[in-house]
Image (cartoon, rainbow, N blue to C red; front, side):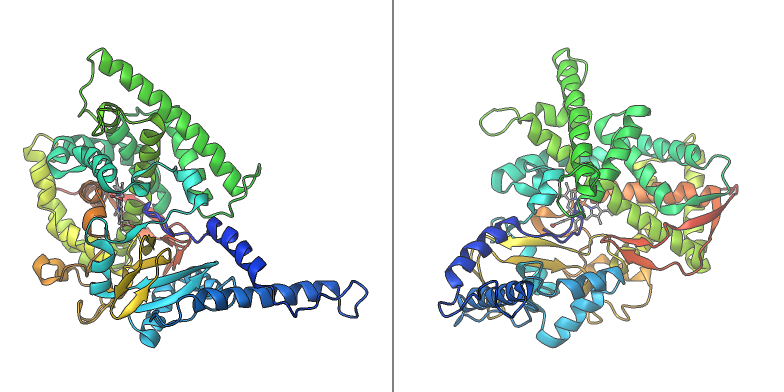
Length: 520
Ligand code: HEM
């Protein structure tokens, strides 16, 4: 899989592919190919290079010919081995991935084949395509986490399980993330956000927007989901998650000093800390000091499968790692884009401020606290976030794999091929969202006007993001405290967005800050 919200979007070399490639190469050496001796006139390296190209060409031909007669989607597999990887990576670097996809849709239609680093992929776009990929339980699409990524994220997380195991794990997460449960903790979230924000910005006249949002969202998730108190343990965990996240994009070489090696070390320390947390919670539960629904740790520690067995510790830890990874980077992107927009667009800033002034009034009437119903009233502020996620979705798309042959739109999609779903084609489709290049939050005034499977920043179907409501509350509360206490301006005018692979302001959004006091 390419992304990860954990969704995170990284290219990788499929390890199975190497094995496969080796087997095919052995079979495909043409019998008439003479391998010249070392004293031949051609330099040895040239012979090796030509041989490799011939063999890779033969390999690709064989792989495609296996499906001859079946109507594979149109498209280009690019050059042997690298496929279209180089142009894809270049587009990503220049924030032109949307264009890369759009060019191919124009040329081949909404379903096309490509090849990205040794793996052939079929890109499925459009409303019908999204429906195919997202709907149903066993719909023929399974997760495709590459080995490099699963060494860091774990091999037993929610991404790796299907059927009843997926239901069990997702159910446990939802115990804590569903709106009815969030209602109980939104007050605590509000206090945490406020406290973190003031702690981070106290006495400062400038800040790095991205770093600020990352630290706060990480700390809030840590406290609310895992009950981790402020202190050195949490700071060390934050540093380790940054290292681990960097490793998901690195060449998977587990050597000391490499990004991947550092990530593996960080992952070991993260596992150790979560293991201690789990043991602590087990003891407290045995002593009757905590209830299963107190937080995510107690919920998972008490969770039993259909055979009455408790979950193995490594499965719990892998799911905690996923929850941390999935939650803070994505939410940080929405918040960073929001800060950037408010610095640029006076009209939107005015409307957001007006709505937050009303929330401030409610806060004063509630003895200084914001409750669930107050957050629900921040409708305009949320519509701005929705529009930001339409135009710059935190998760660009993701890779899955077909678990069986599938036919779609008259095409044959073979078993075992990589499938890529992408947010932008429907988000930027003028038939769905008129004038899609225009920032217009009012499109979300009537949610029923948006067709199903067209707006998919949180995915869709049975794997739709379980953290969507958590993210929503966190974004709204952070924006509330920011706009009612500060004014800010960009220090780098027109700072571009880069995708590495998540979309962030290229220089981390340095901001000039000025405290202000708003009256309700
Ligand atoms: C703006 C913020 C967020 C965005 C845009 C986002 C986006 C997504 C997307 C697109 C998926 C589906 C991936 C796929 O089907 O391949 C997903 C899955 C997931 N997200 Fe989020 N997410 C966000 C916040 C969160 C938060 C706050 C949490 C946890 C507290 C979370 C936890 C998860 C988990 C556990 C999954 C896997 C669900 C499954 O496989 O059943 N996410 N997210």
